[in-house]
Length: 423
Image (cartoon, rainbow, N blue to C red; front, top):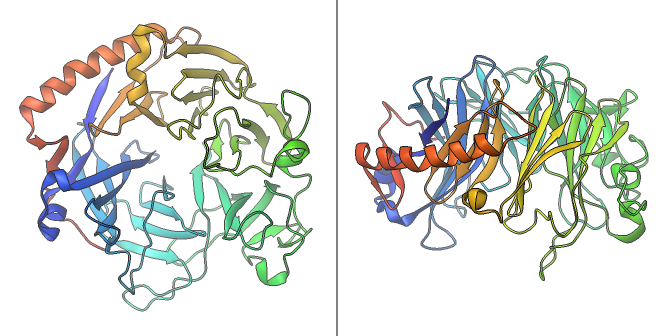
């Protein structure tokens, strides 16, 4: 069944800052599904009138009827304000770790736990204090995803790495248990992205990120690194010709196999034609190749910053959408379908961003300008063309229906929740 959701902006947020709908800019960063099927979305909302404009991270929960049922505004305020609990920005990720808890991660491993009903921020791992003076502990992870069995595959940042001035996501690790208000799980590191960590000392280690039973730092880490072991088409590694790559989020392709995106350092002149890879790495750190069939130039994800891969671990498929095409791979990494966006029937895909796979295998796309979410199934992964064409036609029809039935201005869809907690 093809569905189109409104990605709403609560009226309480608009009234709080007294701004017109058209003054707001919203980026839809992430989508996550709880084990019970509830869908959560993460948006970065900000007023577009200056560098010190009010902004917040907006988490919204949607019910089975496709309508929003709850929302919370996190980190609301101006960037210059002191004492803000949650630092907001486009590098934040969302993960529904259970039906009772949702996690926000980003900004040097800061992680915050929100109850599933979106009533309040329950705990935080950021080294600071929560409003009720509970100690939040230290950091946890920069990004996380839930595996089919409920484990968490995490990306953890490290400091004092060559070619980087700031804390940089560099370790892949597994948490066997979920974080909770009074529990920060230990993470077992199983892979490193950038091997240039010779300047690190014990102070750069994290007590909860372990390798062989002790904290990771310096040369005490999983080796060889992904920069050294992920194959390149010309049979050379990243380290032979380029600076080490960077990563975003590791997506589970099965319980113990993950897709790890690797990208070249961003250049001011543009990155089209620069190397990238979607590596297949298991939870022991062994590289099982990569998602095949991609050319550095013809299939480049850099134009438009299409850095997301979506996976369907229950069925063993991976998906990617960029300005060149829509791609489908098998669990083994074989490219089984590609839709060329230059073809007339698929040109409308250029307007969308891939965000996730639903538990039933549906594809989740977001229209960043019209603030709508398109959800549709692909019955035949070897021939996704008919399903994609029908989804794009249905999107046009449903968009017209929504415009007539719901008030909106400049594609900002207003919604008034019963309450909107601000944290």
